Length: 432
Image (cartoon, rainbow, N blue to C red; front, side):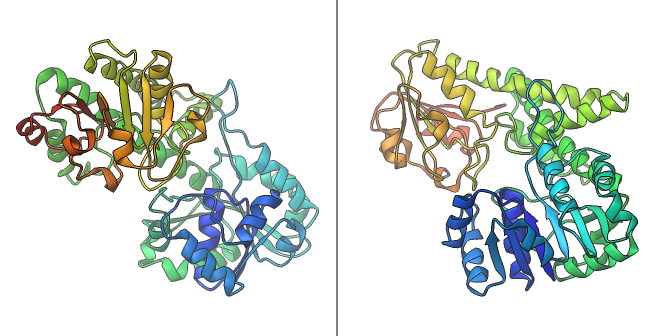
């Protein structure tokens, strides 16, 4: 098939590259000409394991085309995926759909024969209805079907998630569109029950409902971790005991920093806003958002407590600053408010992250990026394990720090408290 991905952000680029690897001809469109030129040179703008190799292979075989020419790409394609950003509006919880509608208005003037228009971007319930109204003339001619096909790609695991999906959700009542899309996804559907055809509104809501539920699990275990610290219980035992119940499941029950990234923060807020429009109160999701916001401050205050309130001139090292491992994504990362607070208190901050230096900290005084773990840790007063990259799981802290008195704050509970005690290391975890 011939596909067009509009937007070469995380979703559009990963989906486009993976679809081309299945043998489809894929046009990836973006108005940023510098980005397109860079992609045509084989440069990947995001950190995603395995993506660069697949991109170069399919681009070389001319199955993957990067272009700024929307007209040509749409005309030559059978299925159009809208993959533009839907960020949270300023001073509001609602999703900003201006980029989605801008694309749709352009498509209105290009399409002259049958196309399937798919919202791959995360959009609130009824967005598909609004898109259809803009394309009403084309709809009456029966040359467009508007479909919702939400993505469920985890950053750092996106290639695997695309190739082995838990489910493919297709929101449409068009038998023609459904038949075409089932054929498109057939190479990666291992079982028929993983392909789920529902209403368009249903598909739109499934995405938000899924992310809000996962955010709730993270927030729940984080709140229990607070209780465990007071009660002298190890949160890891609680997580294991709960997670072995098949009704609950072990995933997303690891205590740590507040959730972050490109999805959970904006999607929970957008879901609350959608419920408000339908005059429904999602009190649980509201509590999740509130608790998650408070957690950033709670863990920052714990850093201050570990250092006994003496932050000035202390050398504090962050190992990992991204919101999760195997990505360079800094959106809503807990490290940002933490480092800004500590910097304001005149601490000397060093950080190392396998995905490189971060623009978020470049203009902060006394915040330094180090090119190696050893450079970041040398002579530190406090090491903060913020992101659980594999690089940080077998460290010899005494050899790295080369200092008799130092402290470890393991925000991901990577290390064993008993082993740290045996090594006579002043160690602090989360919920233990």
